[in-house]
Amino acid sequence: MTTHRIETITRTDVPTLTPDTPIRRATAILVEAGAAAAPVVEASQLAGLLTQKDCFRPALHASYYREWTGCVADHMTRDVVSVDAQDDVTSVAEMFLAHPHRVFPVLKGTALLGLVHRSDVLALLSRIS
Image (tube, rainbow, N blue to C red; front, side):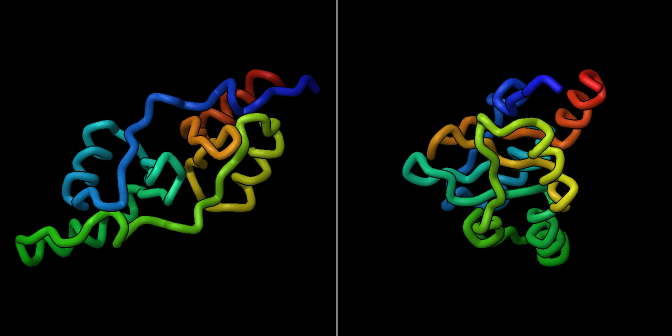
């Protein structure tokens, strides 16, 4: 099989957030972008990941009490599973089997390159198989 690097299917035009972004604004950003998740960046480094699922608790709270509280840092995942831009698509496919995630942040060195979606990995595997 030919080697296909994750970098070739990484989505680089993704919304990014900061830990201090109000959770109401972050939720709106995810919804407006139709994004499953957004990387959280602090000092040019990946600090976490905020998913749509992470936004449900504050959204439900707001629907009950008519008040949004907190910021991204209060709800994001800090221990993020990421992949390297040079990783082979098959190794990342195996990671998607091992983890329930829909996206992984893609790093080039220590810099955030973007996100790789499970659906894009499956599509590439389908095309090359």
